[in-house]
Length: 363
Ligand SMILES: Cc1cc2nc3c(=O)[nH]c(=O)nc-3n(C[C@H](O)[C@H](O)[C@H](O)COP(=O)(O)O)c2cc1C
Image (cartoon, rainbow, N blue to C red; front, side, top):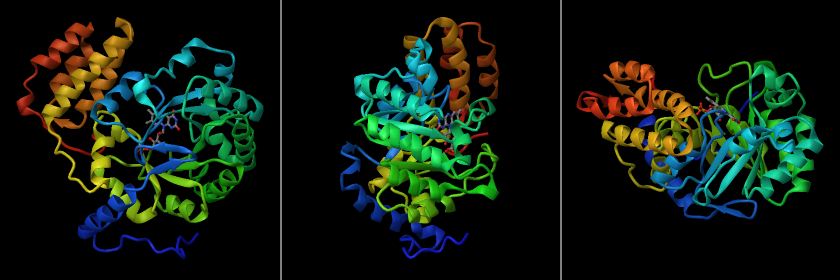
């Protein structure tokens, strides 16, 4: 498909200078209020739903550095919500400081999705998102998650039921298609707009791709061209503040969804917003990594029991340390720590002066 459009991409120029021109253009556009339906958001930089990762402590960490435009909790299954499964409700824990906050539901039955959406609204959420991207077999086998990409009309049906049921804005998050031979993102963008969704997030990978290879931002551009009123949020490979400028330059997207880039960089939304507002973001150092890691572990300790906290320490510790050089001994010891107390003393006692932080995807 040709991605040539009648709307020129606004930030041409050499790779060296497009950053500055995009920056001033975006700084201007961010001076306007950003609305999702009637809901005003602080910015157009959102934090992604991340199953097993974007829990309450994760979101508290993003808050410490400054409010993102919107937090999404990790996905919850509609059948688990409607049968009031307490473990599922716990995934939706949030504090009043986290507004605006969105919940994401996963399922393929329109009536049950509407019931789940009602529960989400009653829990005080500001936004309801439909998951059309989860690639996991046990989710897709009943046609949920990215399984829905094989039935675009069903996505329209689910959205119509949900939009009719709740007052909060409804959004959806998709991959570009099941595989390269069946790209449906622009078609779903139009369907979602007709069904009343206010924004669509495009993860620029197919289901078949999983997380391999770079995200194809051309499809985000194609969705932006397909969209009339629905807002298009770009997602995929936003690992540092400047990547948002590059994404805007090639897609003209309305907003940005940070996913893996936020794991171990809780400041990323804040720094991206700074850059998009025309300010130079702070240069992050290994001292920032150390203090954020300790604060994150503290937040985990306040939320989880010792056994779960230790498991979370290893997982979260790995996110922070994978972006640092010369920390291999600490990584190994942290994985062997028998208690959270031992893990904390390892981190505090480590010679951080020898380590170095580099932004990016991490190893
Ligand atoms: C560990 C993990 C969990 C995820 N969980 C969800 C989820 O619950 N809902 C969802 O829509 N996407 C989920 N995703 C996908 C991300 O939100 C995002 O679309 C994807 O990682 C691409 O963005 P990135 O390249 O910037 O990481 C998950 C991704 C990862 C790595």
